[in-house]
Length: 376
Ligand SMILES: Cc1ncc(COP(=O)(O)O)c(C=O)c1O
Image (cartoon, rainbow, N blue to C red; front, side, top):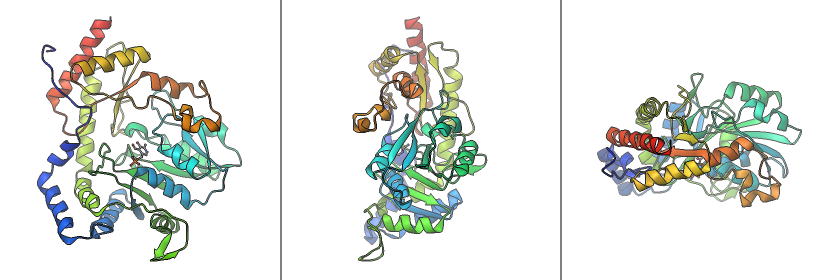
């Protein structure tokens, strides 16, 4: 089995194109022909389509997922020094948005098995400066929203859900991103709903907030050259919106494919003593499939072993956000968030994307099994 080498990338962006090539080509061609490259009809069509899919009042498309978080926070008009709770184990975007707006990121540790924050992890952090919480449904798994929202409501906190890795997932029959006050997402090519470049969106049932977010994304104006707010320029390109209108129709099917691949990994990697597997849950969209090894040396060894055999893998994330040099002025130190820090040393994401061939997945499993035998 292992005498041959298969080249298996960690992610193949082209797979998303080839699954509906003709429809995508036609949609892109239509935009090239009509010429409304900025704010063309496909953009508002996509906002309506996504709102219908999510069953939410308003969707504001924007340039990317980082802008989406930034716009959501800008709309809240918080004061310098106001505190926003965010997970220590996460992509950097939430911390950036908070800090760039002069707000204080209050990191909290994550749960050992879900990798998400939960109500008990942030209860102690709430004080009279705490104004909002950004809940990230990491790797596609829903955070425990019932308890989080309950605690947030008791303390008057705005709940922003970051569904960049979990769009299309549910929690108690509600779409993720529609449970808190504002949802934010990214359409980066690796996401569940992906375009072929950058893209993002903010969504909410609060019409006043939605109106403000829409203006903030458009230089703070509703009417041309009449600037009510200091805004930014953050637009979803018409071509990307045209692509998303097609991809959205297949989002459910694409998530089912991810779930089937995750089930295969869960069943076939079970019982390997040197690795722990992610939770098996209906609330998981498996945007990433992350396994844990006992320590950094073993994790790096498995990564190198896979690479030697042509298989890509990724470390999401190698360093917790509170320990990044960019955030040193907030005064956190090693040991502050032990779970987040431990995860950074032990985690490894395996290939999981619609288009990953079953034979390739079987090969990845066989490689991991032979690695485990080798280190016994
Ligand atoms: C959880 C999360 N939030 C936000 C972002 C930022 O999205 P973008 O790259 O579109 O700015 C990402 C991107 O990877 C992400 O994973």
